[in-house]
Length: 79
Image (cartoon, rainbow, N blue to C red):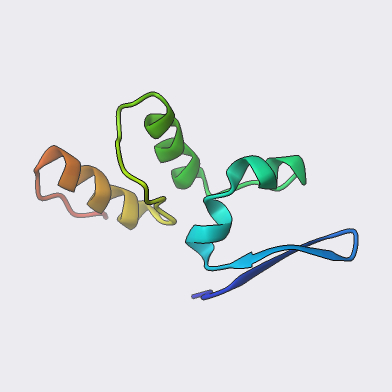
């Protein structure tokens, strides 16, 4: 498990932070031709559409299942 990420572009440090902090800057990463985890992008789209109102970004399927099940008031386990 990674606790810190350093993004470097053209020999310059662009950003350093936890995975949540770095992947929370999706637009900036796209400008550098970098992607974010698919599950993070899916929840970001739900946030943009107003379906999910949370500040956090999930980094794994298990995180997303937990987040969405809490929002739905259900107990669901990721398989």
